[in-house]
Structure formats: structure tokens, C-alpha cells
Amino acid sequence: MIADRVAAVRERISRAAVRAARRPEEVTLVAVSKTFPAEAVQEAFTAGLRHFGENKVQEGEAKALALKALRTQGLAWHLVGHLQANKAKKAVAAFDVIHSIDGPELAIRLDRLAGEAGRTLQGLVQVDLAGEVTKHGLESSRLMRSLEQMRGLSALRIVGLMVLPPFELDLEAVRPFFRRLRELRDQAVAGGLLSGSQLSMGMSHDFEVAIEEGATLVRVGTALFGERQRAA
Ligand SMILES: *Cc1c(COP(=O)(O)O)cnc(C)c1O
Image 1 (cartoon, rainbow, N blue to C red):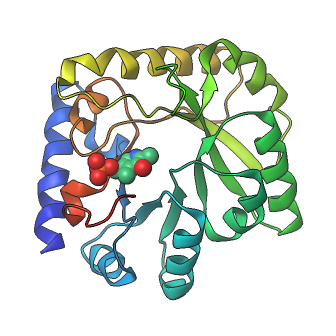
Image 2 (cartoon, rainbow, N blue to C red):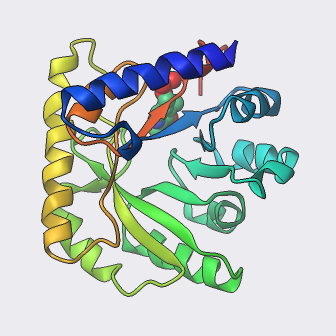
């Protein structure tokens, strides 16, 4: 039952928040439904979840279409995976929050397309803190300058930062990545470079550590929907 899993994850979120002297309401649970059918999203929505994440534009688009009615009842779609420029137009229609903005070029394109579509979107800049060639995101050395270039956007509001750290079995090994993202967020907020203070960090195995380090959006798949049958 998804409802039981939702309750269990919420309980873990609450405990982690309390440990960090934070309020559980500061943490938004984004249910990453990639590879799972629209029915699973419907069930999770019924169990009270409102934020859903997908990592592929096409899959998200199909589910958004199948569940169109839920979107008018408060369901928000988050794109958490890499976004190619040629899919930006589709992404603008299918998603409400884009976590994977990797630079001013993509941000400016999304802003223009959202403006043309009469939509407003929230965006987070994905920061590559691991320096891994396989990971997407913006190098932290370019972050502040890039945020400055995104400052004038109107249809796309840049509300925070996102990180996808390397997978570590030892949870303490990921903590420095979360802490570093929070420091960068604080620096950007202090410089007036962000229209929000969101931190998208933490997945099924490490979201508690992320919450201790300040996460406001946790992206949880497996702990809610179970193991994925195919690679995502
Ligand atoms: C799949 C995915 C998640 C969720 O991962 P789980 O380990 O299943 O919780 C979170 N963030 C991104 C970017 C993902 O692609």
C-alpha cells in the first residue's frame, strides 16, 4: 500500500527535521514516480501527496496528460532529470518545477518559452559538486556569475539549488555535498541572486541527512513506490 509508505516516509521526514531543530512543514516531499504508471501516481495523490517528480520529459508528459484532472486539483510536476534544449518546449508544458537547469542558456530559453505559453515556472539550478563527467549540472565555480545572468527572468523564477551527489553507502560521505550546497544557497541568497531559498537534495537512502543539512525539497522514489523494475 502506497499510503503506508507515504506515512512511513513522512514520519522519517518529521524525525529528521526535529533532530535538526527544523519544522517538518519546511520539507516538501517530491514523489519520484519514474517508471511507475499513472495509477501509482493517482494512488499516491489519494494518499495526500501533491508533488511528483519525473526524470524524462516524454514520460512526464504522458503522465501529466493521463492525469490532467489532478493538475487542476493541486498536483505539481517536477522535472528532476537532465533537460536537453530541444525538449524545453515540451518541458514547459508538462512541468511546474524544473530542478535541472544547468546554466543561463537553458534558463533563458525556458523563460522565453514559458512566457510564450503564458505560464510561470519555478526553476532550480543543478550544481555539479562531484565534478563527475557523467553527472549533469553547473560547476560551482560558475554558479554566482550564472545566477547573475538569470536574474532578469520573469516567467521562470529561479528559486533555489539542486544537487545529485555520487551514490555512497556511507551516509556521512554525502553530508559534505549537502552542506556545500546549503553554503552556496546562503551565499546566493545573501547576494540577492535567488528568488527563493529552496534546496533540492536527498533521495530514498539519504534524505534524512539532507534534511539535517537544510533540504526543503526531497526527491523520494523507491521508499514510496518500491524498487524500480527497469533502469531509469
Ligand atoms: C530517481 C531519482 C530520484 C529518486 O531516487 P530513489 O533512490 O528511488 O529515491 C531522485 N532524484 C533524481 C534526480 C532521480 O533521478
